[in-house]
Image 1 (tube, rainbow over the protein chains, first blue to last red):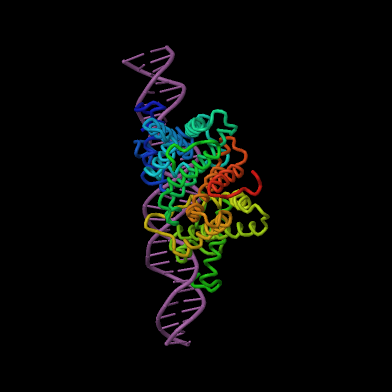
Image 2 (cartoon, helix red, strand yellow):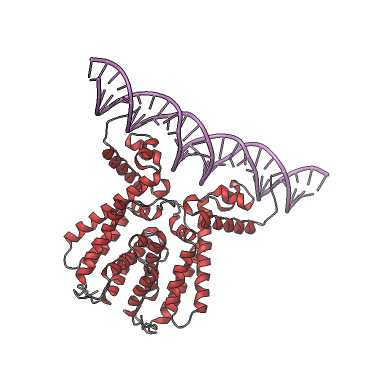
Length: 203
Length: 203
DNA sequence: ACCCACAAATGAACACTGTTCAATATAAAA
DNA sequence: TTTTATATTGAACAGTGTTCATTTGTGGGT
């Protein structure tokens, strides 16, 4: 088969990302295969290289999509949230990961080879997540806080990330940790408290 | 070539782990190859399967070795440490990872396939690291603390791990974070302070 | 309606991977 | 010395990522 017109370039791009994301969710990073993605999309390997340049390009695009899905997930939860938005955020962070462990892990398992970098667009898309956290942190600290809110937010994301990573990866299971979300939330509250935050739930 | 007696079973085991660890450190998890490990050890692929059952078995053994090296690294730093042992611990945690990023990342990139589990020995070896942290945390909290020190220690390890993971993986670089160690240490101090710890350095 | 130039899709080829297992060469036992 | 047991090999298999010459449908120009 030669040239086709079943999809425009951007449709094809979206299709490959969608099918690739589904495969990644099902089998995980270690068993991910470009040929399989192409087959599921009704194309062959070469097409992935036409569209993304390399398999790493496709994986980067899939992971950026996952970041966007994740940001949407957090926003939806925050809308439903009552007074304790920090708890809602931490819980949602974990829930997204625990409901699709393969997909979430792949974000951190995939490393671009040296020489390749994320596009500016990818970076901007992925930064949205941190932005959401930053807004919530700022809302909860005193208006005149001397803290570097952006930096503190990144650090709190890292804190929650560490707990989530151990929870999804099984490190915590080996250590008989039963409630990683509660631990993560406790650490976040302690750090926020050190910057003038009062805990709404009393925990 | 048939049966040999160049090495005893346990010598061969150690040799393959050593050569494998070196390869992993050089090329990273994604480019790791069983055939290459065997070649460097002066054997062929099949031998890895005789000794470790599978490539995952070898990788698990290498990663356990890395955990033990890491624990030794922390202990050596703690011996040299002056008054601020918490800072020494956090700094050493990062330094070990940053000096051998491929090797450190591989601990978390490798996942045992379903059905396979770590041996009891591997689990015990890997738990030594957490034990070291637990000792230091206990030493720094009030003797009559009501806190669950084991659980808090695990959580603080997760906190530092999250920061270290972003530092090694480049997520922090994308966000212009310049001093992840300082951030991690600040979070750890805030949480310890919430449990009765007084900061020796005044930071 | 025709033709043609272009671009998109293909799939064979290459060098690799993990895994299995019959054959083999050697060490240990009899 | 002969026999038994086993450690080591390497060919075979099915898969991988990547490249690229070849093919073929498509859109634009006549």
